[in-house]
Image (cartoon, rainbow, N blue to C red; front, top):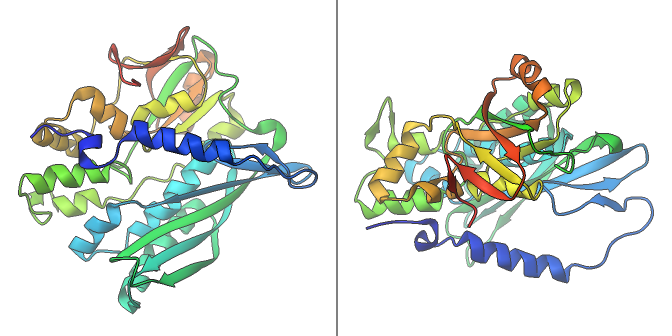
Length: 328
């Protein structure tokens, strides 16, 4: 069977249209202290005087289903922190704190203590504090558990990075991901399960399930780049894959030398007969975070973080990977 994300149950195009209808209905905007200065980006920012408070919200997604099958819950908390912190970094904000939300079908001390281990580790990596949260027990609504969070950070108002300054001839650099992260797991799971493959089957030195549970990398080192270099755009490659670059500015993003994807991506692509462009629309494909800067900053950035030139910005529009347009 030939798979794509829509057949697996997640139609990104329909989801984007649905989100647009939601945003169109949200018209009220606060005035005065605390009014927004950035909305509907990777993070929103409110004005609190000399600086802005950035806010973002995200969850772990269906990765928790794999965790439940494997009975391994000590890393999904890292994913929860990562998905939020990485989005704060995309506008140049330094993460400060977060709260979590756990929805569960029944009280489970072991499960919650294991989730807490990951949350603690994610906070340590990010240098943030988990200052509270909510655990909701809802047996009539939840089968298993769901995990999400909200994070805040701070940023000087004149240092907010939105992508507005991106220009043709800017260079696109990619920081390697740690693997599949927390996006596209619905497609990955459907491909694996449809082929009757066990999550406990060996996959290199791990089991397949353990490979899928590899925690999302937290790219906090990007803060060094933001402080010391001229940066025009930042992108956390999550749902929608590298088409996330379109969120920054309506230009042509050309990835002509992509990083080599980890083995898990080739495995999913071959097993599910997933088209090349669909893979790059769904997964990070080994490129978890992207930095867009003018050419004269590239070598300086490379000295600060593990980043590689993968492409450039050009006149026009669209996202291209090795000559193939993937954003339509």
